[in-house]
Image 1 (tube, one colour):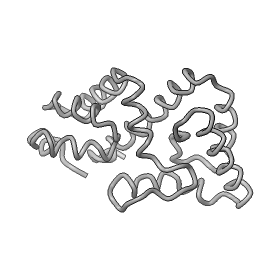
Image 2 (spheres, rainbow, N blue to C red):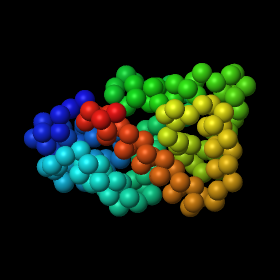
Image 3 (cartoon, rainbow, N blue to C red):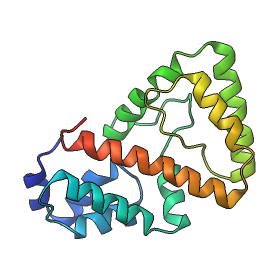
Image 4 (cartoon, one colour):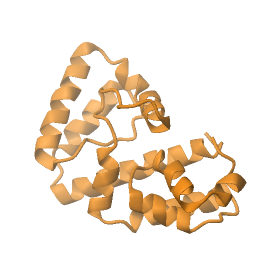
Length: 167
């Protein structure tokens, strides 16, 4: 956690590094850091959303690449890795057959779309995630990229709230 007033005073590189725990797109972090100072968390969240949706597909893919597959442990021990583990905790408790189906779905998804299946997993069961994975396998690539970006936006927003003490 960091106080918003402190964040507003950080150097650009440190502010960007802080934001990368919330979303691994370097361009998103740089854009948001450059918009400081923020008067309050709501202004930061609005700017975070605006910055995210102003990016292109390659920036979105950079953010997606930092996420572990559903059902797999994230690499490292940093803030983003701890958050990811917590966000997937209900899915991790799924029965072995559901976990195996998610692993197979992840394989098929990556083969079809060439990026990790991304879903805001916090609070969702393995069964719920599997149902979404199966549904989204029917999307066309452009629609799926946009849907995955929407899920990343949810994750980013939740992490920004957590980073700055609301959540």
